Amino acid sequence: MKTLYLDLDGVIVDIVSHAKARHGESVNIGKATTFDKDLFLDPPMIEGALDAVVELSEHFNLFFLSTAPWSNTNSWSHKRIWLQNNLGKLAWKRLILSHRKDLLMGDYLVDDRTHNGAAEFKGMHIHFGQEGFEDWEKTLKFLIKNK
Image 1: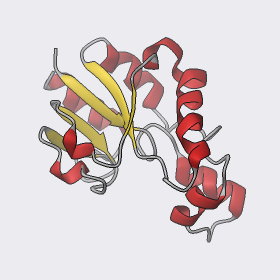
Image 2 (image 1 turned 90 degrees about the vertical axis):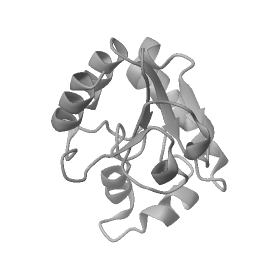
Image 3 (image 1 turned 90 degrees about the horizontal axis):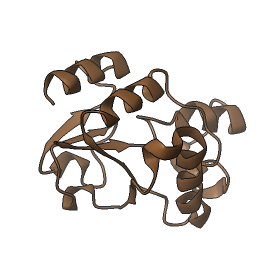
């Protein structure tokens, strides 16, 4: 069974809309992740993410890989609490927090950014939100086809 890592923020969790709802449209998302100590506790899920996770968990060795802001220590535990509250058994002991995503071994990484080693990931980096992977429908179709 192939290994698949899913980034949380921007792939599973709609952190941008959540930050804007809490702090206004002009909020600097990077700064919000640092000063808003509870930002990661209850953001909404991206459309289609739940159904995708359920299906992908049947075909892949699935893990959630995320970077937590170093200066927001609450973010570390809040990401785990969010997974527990929203994905339950699907995420049980499957959270990896790292600032070096390139150090992990696997077949696929779905991430909305190229930072923190995502672009250097040894397997295939699927750049979520970009051409061909604009949403969960297209991303899921690709992954299931290439399982």
